Image (cartoon, rainbow, N blue to C red; front, side, top):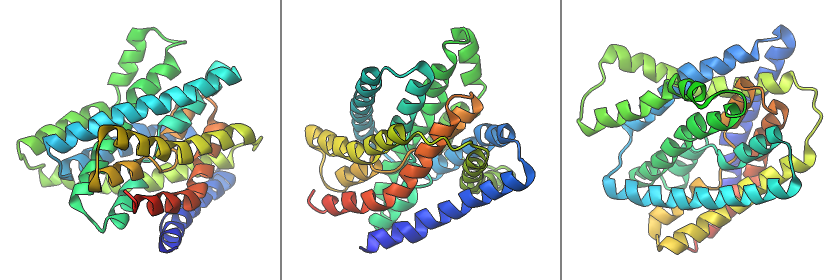
Length: 306
């Protein structure tokens, strides 16, 4: 029960307040959603990734084990959602949006504080979550953009779009600086800290602005299925993969918990930036964040049996 109230007070309520402010700002000033989207893609997201990677603690053994888990988990989750969207014969735009709402999950601003709360600030479990965060940052900014542009641009144009994103360079630079123990000059590190700390607020305000401008033709069945696959099937597959790989202890618990978080804001930012089902994507993020208040305590309860 304590986890239920923790998630309510420290995740759901603050997130809802920020989204509500975004809605109010749109209604009052008709804020340009595209400008907010570009700030998230080109400024806030790269800074967050760089800072989190540079400050993380990880070793090669943890990295390889977690990467193997992620590849298997991601493949199984992708297969499940692919079967569903093919059976439903969805049109291309909704197929992409539905897929993104399930395979892209909030591994940073939701999962990091949740990990530290559940495991009492354990540095090892944090390093596990950081690796997941790396992958969940890289894939939307490569595969996610490719799927949205492949039908309307040449592969060269799509590759150029991907390579124009700063987050692609933030990851290797942060890892190299960590590996060689090179300090980031203070005049650079301080603004990066400021910007990374602003990511969550800006992303949630962007979601609120998007929700405020929507016609609210609710995609009930698709949002419901998306949430079930993300919040219920996701952690079940996580349990299955750690069992298949024989992973035990804190590593297994941290990996399963990482699979249980709601849909990532990146799915909304991609939908807005490339004009692909932004209403459904916004509703999927909002609903999954709300319902996670009930599903995550259940997952945490079962972690006690691992």
